Image (tube, rainbow, N blue to C red; front, side):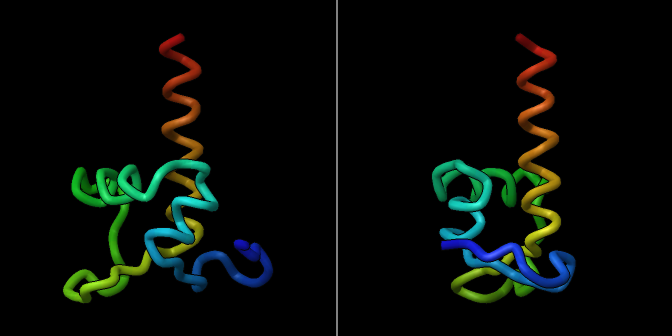
Length: 70
């Protein structure tokens, strides 16, 4: 379960937590990171973490992009 309490600019999520919050599979988070849409807080770590605010921003941008394309 993802908690949205606190400052989303400082909260970090694992790939799975980010995926759960964005409503996408974990692979999508990795794709967004690979394409430069998301930036890991600890890019050299074996388990990257992403800022919650950035994850939600990218998810909203992707969702609005899909809505405009339809």
